Amino acid sequence: FSRSELTGFLEARGVETRPIVAGNIAEQPVMANLKHRVVGDLPNARRIHRQGFYIGCQREMGAEAREAVAAYIQEFMGR
Image 1 (spheres, rainbow, N blue to C red):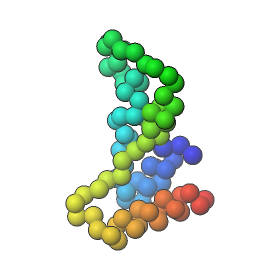
Image 2: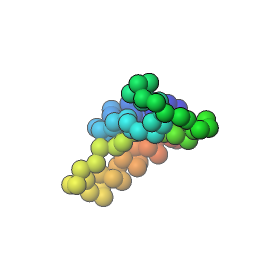
Image 3: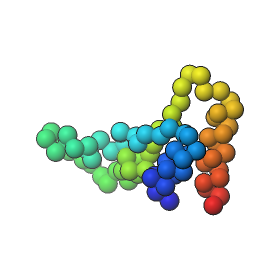
Image 4: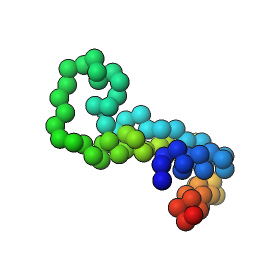
């Protein structure tokens, strides 16, 4: 599955998501303008960069809301 499939599923159920703006910093557009060196293929950093996302989380988010998000993810994974 793709990040957009899972985040779309969550968003449709009212769970706010945002892509992770990190992971493989070598893939950030600004790096084209900076002298840098990449050692190795960085597969884990690349995967986080392309597939990672944040779930909206406020201080007021209680156990019931957290459990609902976990249930939505389990529902998505079980389809």
